Amino acid sequence: MDLSVDVLIVGAGPTGLFGAYYAGFRGLSTALVDSLPEAGGQVTAMYPEKMIYDVGGFPAVRGRDLVKGLVEQAAPFEPRYLLGRKAEELRRGDDRLDVVLDGGDVVHARAMLITAGIGEFTPRPLPAAEGWLGRGVVHFVPALDVHAGQDVVVVGGGDSAFDWALALHPLAASVTLVHRRSKFRAAESIVAQARRNGTRIITDAEVTELRPGPGGVLAEVEVRVKGEETIVLPAQAVVAALGFTADLGPIENWGLDVHQRAIQVDSTMATGVDRVFAAGDVAAYPGKVKLIATGFGEAATAVNNIAVALDPGAHLFPGHSSNA
Ligand SMILES: Cc1cc2nc3c(=O)[nH]c(=O)nc-3n(C[C@H](O)[C@H](O)[C@H](O)COP(=O)(O)OP(=O)(O)OC[C@H]3O[C@@H](n4cnc5c(N)ncnc54)[C@H](O)[C@@H]3O)c2cc1C
Image (cartoon, rainbow, N blue to C red; front, side, top):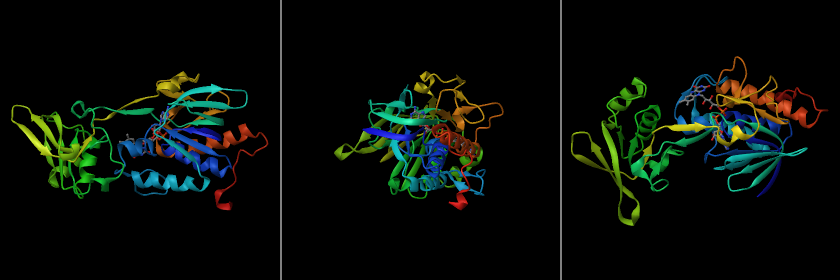
């Protein structure tokens, strides 16, 4: 891959996606790199089915729909998506930045916008599911309809586990939630909702084995319940919703001012490293509030300042999109 763009955006969460729109609006070409297989950052990975109530202009918007809208908004400017790829190394030249991705591909950029949020997510593994990832086991559900008519076992006791169980309930043949403790970390209201809709909930229980059926595809899940006999559940899918760990990882080695897993920026969203800007959850300054709404504003500020950094003759104010 030989790719040169004006702006490389590291992180395709809501902030990076809006940054891609804004860069396009400013006439800058972009690529977005994200280690997740889908765009949308925390929203896609952790709460795509939840309603969000504090994004301007949307009294209520489902996470999945907000991400879809952001992707659509950027689409006319044809950003290049490099999904399932991790930005590992930053090399600084005189007038360009080279960003090395996992696997060794290099993206050449005139400027960079880091919108890496809380970093790269690594799902907590389900030990019994080792070797089953992508063969019936997922950590999050990119498309619900894939599970229509399936027996699904959701493992976990937090908000995400219950969110998936509730979202899958109307279309799956059966949904069983297995949690290794008797108490849940999830909000009481969604636990109550799952109980009301008849989701089978097995507590004090651990998934001990996944078993294939004919053709080697996932067919059954063995669950050991404390003090009771082992249960075998039919399952064509397992959602291992045990949470994620997040880590800025390689970005910490890029010569930026990083404190408590956030990059210090000034009021233009500049990081202090020439032509490297940051916005969204990853960017820190006094009074910072980590919200989607603030990420949007910061992305616009960052990109307009990038436009001037790349062309000192350019106006900082972009003009009104309504006049475009
Ligand atoms: C359960 C939950 C509910 C929430 N509800 C709300 C709400 O109602 N309203 C609200 O405003 N906010 C809410 N938030 C917070 C909101 O989701 C975040 O503020 C928002 O996602 C930040 O967006 P971002 O684009 O800055 O970062 P993120 O969404 O974190 O996206 C960053 C992306 O960068 C990628 N990345 C990181 N490092 C690399 C690398 N080296 N290479 C490649 N990719 C990389 C990650 O994979 C990730 O996809 C909620 C968060 C959670 C967890």
